[in-house]
Length: 311
Image (cartoon, rainbow, N blue to C red; front, side, top):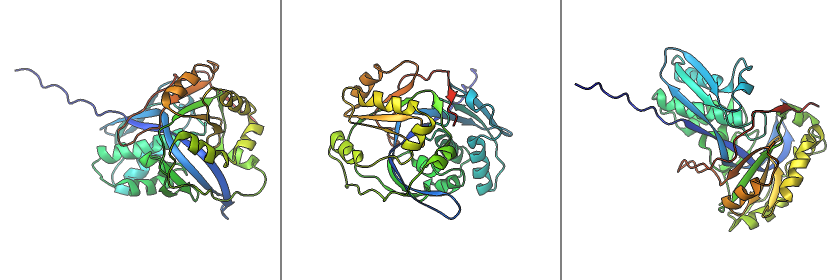
């Protein structure tokens, strides 16, 4: 009698990068949290989270940026696991492995995407079946970007991040994400922001092509871009390099930076443009992430070198 083959391990849960195509700061609550209006898409790079049953809760960090999280005493993935277990009234038991490919503190929601991936994966592992809305509610207590990362689909984001609505119909397009190798802390960028608040954007129901989308987005902005450039001047260098690339329809910073993106007509053009950028920069190029089809086009691998922008 032949021994039974072990059951195959389930595939790792993707935690795709979040990109703010624009970001308006529309106000501030009495508790100090800022109100936002943003159009969010996902892709073209991702972390990956694996989970298997275990007697206790643990987290192993791998990947190019895993070491950058090693010093954190309480990673968002572990906090997400404990929050989900508490909501379900069960002990948190799982062996988690996070393969970290997204730069840390880079404005593309890496930590939030990881927490969302943990909630999705553990919801299945523990047989909870809580659904996306319940998971988003649990995630909202972990961070402003976690709710939108639960579904990892294009969305209009309002409130402090917890108010989500449908995005306009998006055309096929390409994205090139670029970071100069510098981290920016979100609270520091918000504190450096000056001036008043912006009005929410007026968006069409859909865009026929990437060029039309870029024209409308060019009339909007990222209200955190100016303070981020003041704190980290290389952001301006990255933006200038993106705008000079053939086929770049729009260049803008994502979130609180320092990652910037270039919008292109298609993924192939974005890939070609990436080759012209300095090798020292982290880059990822491809199309938009498709949560339904679980497709993700990976760009260039991240460099191990990672600096910290200081004020």
